[in-house]
Length: 389
Image 1: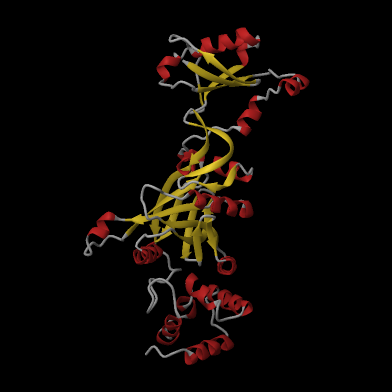
Image 2: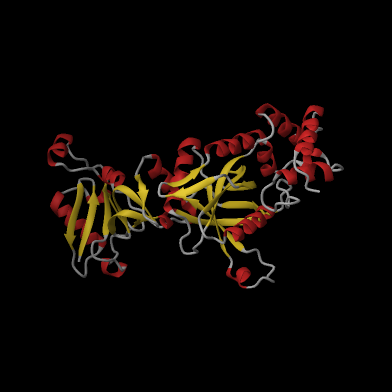
């Protein structure tokens, strides 16, 4: 069997016997290069597990071409000799040709998502209207009560299109979402992706979108997958929501590679494409399935007063008729209850100036009464709109 040893001076193919131990592999390399065996640490690259010298290699269940990392403490190569011979160091190999492993729960910063039940119902309703026929992305806005926890307060559906160049959000609408969230004291904390196929959790271009956001914010965000619930779809009488939502966090390794521009813009339907070869399951490849960077995390529904249960006319997002109904029929409800819905505030952005919106949001947060000028403008909007009565 042939194995590959990557160490401080480069990579070397070694033909091993059936009875070789890890110690025999170290002895072979020592006999050839004469380093100090006491400072040697051997790892299996596919698991990053430190191996004991007495371990029989044949019992490890490895395949031909398995890669071992051998770090020799205190052993370095003369810089001039390295330049002439073209050899590279152990650290340089790891940086240029990293090993991509299936991530574990401890490999990600975010461990839990608290998600509003009302927005789960809203996404389910809209997803059924779309019939899961295409990729759609919702923006999640919320807070970070702890480093490892995301609390989603509301979800918005930004104007978008998904083509060969990936997800393109309407810039004006997206900026409006961010500005409204900032005044409310919340931030972009994740994306909900409506999937048509359960087996493909996230298109690789979605990971590119996350990477672009990370380059700007330097903050990890979560990915939530909304997929059709077979039980709810099979019977109209089912009380189950028509879509399930699962939460994932991207690994620290993904963010590190993305910030160093390790992925090219082009992708396949399931994989990211790398600028140089990487190790995946003992193979050197240029494509990495996006699932290698995804870590399943806990998600819990929470009761939230922030999003409305529904709008009077349109279940998912408000229209002018909804605004009129809220303004006229909920007159006995305090303003901070009537208007404190993220998507309703986004709709008001099209009717009020930025200064007026800032005043409305700040007044609502403070549970105060809206200024007479704002209320008069609401009345004029209601009077000028087509009658819905």
